[in-house]
Length: 183
Image 1 (cartoon, one colour):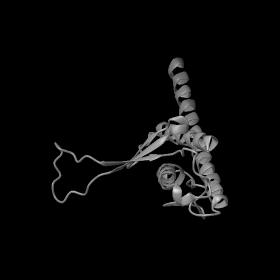
Image 2: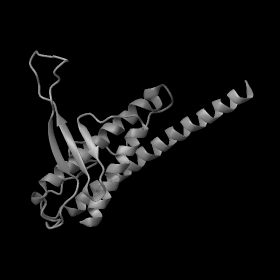
Image 3: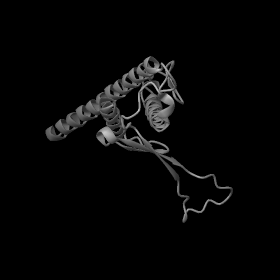
Image 4: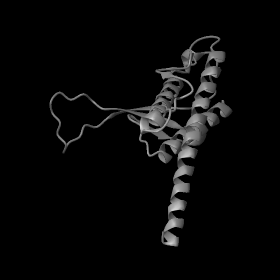
């Protein structure tokens, strides 16, 4: 479990850093990348009938999800990992949100060439054709496949963020050189 917890912590840190680089803020989630003890808070705002008082904003209900497991439970008994499952589903939702942001703001969505698409579709607890939940007995293979797909999507987002940042840096350096020459 220690390696699994560390891997999820690194993946959450990557997601947080890429979102920061792309100036993206997750809707309904706060990420806490803390290594092997990383967590995700889900914020749910109450539906208010007709009172929209800006001086007294509604406080959200916060659900705390641990993106790690203590290690005292066997991997094959998925029904014992409901909190961990909820954290992984929250991670996928954040991954989906950031992926949709990239799809909207790059390529065709930004007026350029063909748009970018995430390598795998994400819907609720599924990425591609695999569920991220540990589920029941003998689900380790499907869970491993879902983790692989999630890492592939993380790699895609990292490559995009690196490209965007390097292009911005290159453009900034170019304009500084032009300014110094007085052109």
